[in-house]
Image 1 (cartoon, rainbow, N blue to C red):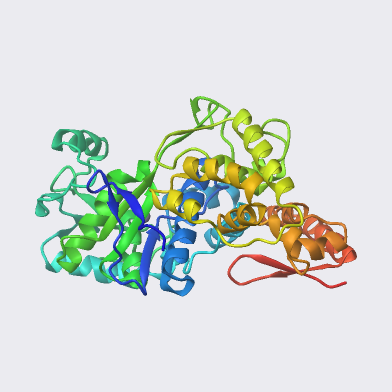
Image 2: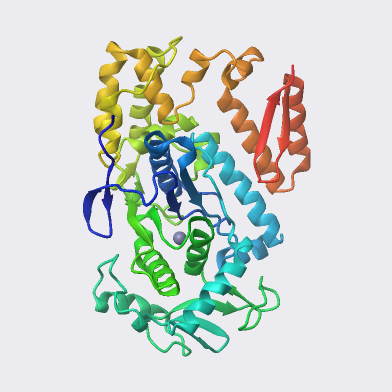
Amino acid sequence: MSSALKIYNTLTRSKEFFEPIDRSNVRLYVCGPTVYDYAHIGNARPIIVFDLLFRLLRHLYGENNVKYVRNITDVDDKINARAAERGITIRELTEKTNQIFQADVKALGCLDPTVQPRATEHIAQMIQLIERLMSAGHAYAADRHVLFSVPSMPQYGELSRRSLDEMLAGARVDVAPYKRGDMDFVLWKPSQSSEPGWDSPWGRGRPGWHIECSAMSWAHLGEIFDIHGGGIDLIFPHHENEIAQSCCAFDREIMAHYWMHNGFLQVEGEKMSKSLGNFVTIHELLASETFGGRAWSGAILRLAMLRTHYRQPIDWTVKALEDAAKVYNDWMRAIDRVTPSEPTEEFIVALNDDLNFAKAEAHLHILKKSNPAALAACLKFMGFASHEAASDNQSEEAQLAKIGLTKSDLEQLISQRIEARLTKNWTESDRIRDQLESLGVSLKDNKDGTTSWTVIS
Ligand SMILES: [Zn+2]
């Protein structure tokens, strides 16, 4: 048997043994993207880190005993602004952006979460939560807004461990006349007729961002669940506010037992920002030559991301990608035509230690010489799919190889086509479809925003 999983819990600032509430229903929630633009490489970090955790939990508790929920925020003021700027509807913008996001994270080797709830489909639950908070004296309506009353919750601030002064300093940036307390935050706000809105007891309006996650985690995981994850930048105020809302609405001490946060990402030693010109999207890394003069496969991006421990800050550099490519190609050579056996005990033990990838990688370098079949199994475990071509003739890669295509070529074409559709370039989108059809690949656009494919020849 594997040793038990230990994870670093931001709530207690310590590594703890993981004990699920129910071993047959292990529940994980991770804050997902706001779909208004291409996801940048910093957004990819929690997606990849928590995908690895999801895989590990499935291994430890059984594939059908883990429920992973990652939401899609499709109502947000950034979305409204971007749709107006581009002269398209909000729905068009969020649908297409979500399609690109789904294709990007698939290329990064991530499994689909069990559920990807959309905020706009959970407005009723948000209204219910807000009503509970109001009747329990934790929220109040003022000037067509509803606000959470921070002083009504004495434990507020426990996750981030910020001092009252620090929190107040942050809150004072946004003082509105209708707020009773400076730190009170918005649960519901009024919508102009040009803005998306839903009828509510407080008039036509839309939710604040924080309440979205409390409602979606409640709807899919219940009042209390096991693990809540996200980037370190979300600890305050987003996660602090999620805890305040959920604990006060359900009169509970706790929302999730374990809070996990991945560290910051910077690019070539600098904070990533559009003004510095070092803003890198997942899409560009996969499909263009803007970073380091070449496109990178999803597997190399994934490996480069995992090679820095998830809690440490990561410096995203061309050098790091080149190093990851070298390691990856070495491994691929070692497992060429090898059938995967089982991941080794040492490998699982390393990951069980708060996802200690460095320890796992050191072990993989040993396996490369001593046990390529186990190496292949460990790589498969972590979502590096390419080995399947070597081991399974019926695999997607093998089918594609027969018609002279690699999977990353195909994925690139699919994402180019999604991009063409986003800019309403139907000629280009049809051209790519026709090109693939002439090669023997048929595309199907699914309702959930993904594009799937089959080899027809
Ligand atoms: Zn959230």
